[in-house]
Amino acid sequence: MAWQTSRFLIDLSKPKVMGIVNVTPDSFSDGGRYPSTAAALAHCERLISEGADILDLGGESSRPGSLPVSLEEELARVLPLVREAVKLGVPLSVDTYKPQVMRAALDLGADIINDIWALRQPGVDDSVDAMQVIASHPNCGVCLMHMHGEPRTMQLAPMAGDVVAQVQQFFERQVQALGRLGVAADRMVIDPGIGFGKTVAQNFALLSRQRDLLELGCPVLVGWSRKSSLAAVCGTSLESVAALDATQRMVPSVVAAMLAVERGASIVRVHDVAQTVQALQVLAAIR
Image (cartoon, rainbow, N blue to C red):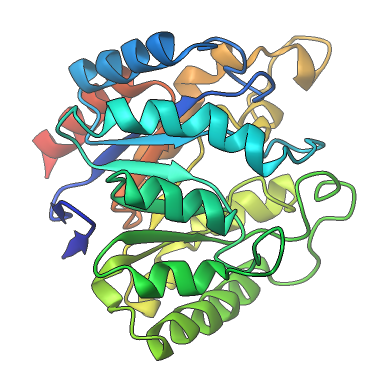
């Protein structure tokens, strides 16, 4: 199995590590750590040296409770980094739901669009549609993520019912809609959206039954890295889950990533690249 992207045909016969690069002041784990293009680019280079196969650049936080940023602000954060990061020799993903940002990033040579809204958002002036941006590009890759609700309020009223069945049905609709626009199946990857409008139990149900998603025929990308659901089940003696700092969630993050790979995930999206790469090497040794 392979993932067709703008410049790369990514071989998914072995799991791939997508390194997270947030150029945001308010992301839940690393917001504000890379305030300049130079600092963010240095982080990109560091992740590649640690073994990242793909880089994922984001200019707007999607943590629970986050507020949207303007199109102009997101473009100002992301595009200078895209211009430089496309020169690093690895597939470059841009985490955005705004069609105008998608188009601008792809025009600069980005390989993948990673969209938490799964291409359901129109442009700010309704003049451009996210699905049309992807369909009009000859071969960019796209990751469709499932989200219940929207970031500002999604955890106030999480999903009800069988989460796995609902996520499957959602992806069936989105994949078919893209297919009708002429987007080839080998350009699509799906992400169940851990933590996006789901309870702790639902997140772990998605992990437990993750193989059900493989029936759709698309590679699965999973992002468990430093999510609060991991802290919720760690049995920590700290007074509250919130007291478990995001950087202290590295070990459970790596464990969750390995469990996802064992259950068929082709790509894991992570903050802790070096540790995840080492864990994958151990997993490969027993296969």
